Amino acid sequence: MDNLKTLMGGFHLSYFQISAVLVVLLITYLMSQLLLKISLALIEQQTLWIRHLRYWIPVARILAWSFGIYTCFYILSPPKEIFFAAATSAGVAVGLASQELIKNLFGSMVVWSDKLYQEGDRVMINEVEGVVQSIGLRSTKIRAYDDTLVIIPNSLLLNTVVTNANLSESSSPVLIDFFLPINTDPQKAMECSRLAALSSDLIEPAKPVIVLTADILTGHVPLTRIRIKAHVRNAKYEKMFISDITKRAKRLFIKHNLY
Image (cartoon, rainbow, N blue to C red; front, side, top):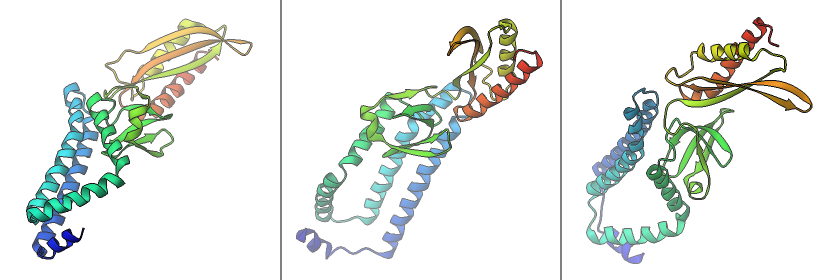
């Protein structure tokens, strides 16, 4: 450490160098944020190969930061002795203080290499369910269905189960159950349910709508269960989609005296 101070005594920075480094870091940060916005915009695209370009966004962000840091060193142009001495000291300090950060970096690499999820996917991690907002080098941000933002360290992904409902597709499957009296006309109930799903503005038209019926016991009360499986066009609209279909189906059930 004393040697480093001695070496630094002959190394001076100009205001231009300091200003240039700050500008590079600002541009790098803005570029990283722009890439994140591009990733979120790709979710809305209908073409599959365009949506899959999101897989390379995390790599592009890492490259952007690597290039930015390299540019900063190039601008500062420290002598080799100072560079290697500083790198050695920083390496020891970082190694001791950032073990958890290294685990998080490995976790982010697992997310990318195994394609566990991307921005816009509906996932469940450690009992947290919601839509992935962003994937960083340290953590993953998930917007839960109660609109809270949950930040999960990527290191948890090394030893936990991840459930992905739509696997990087923009659409997401949804199951909706209705329980009607046992003497309900099942054919009429299924027709009403299908119509309710197809008439929703949030449905993904390229995916099929499946309606099933079954008799079940709730306590000691027999009921007719109508189950709808449909795809919402974007996972972030899932709760709105369920609410919309429920509203439409109940109106049709009432209209046809199925309750």
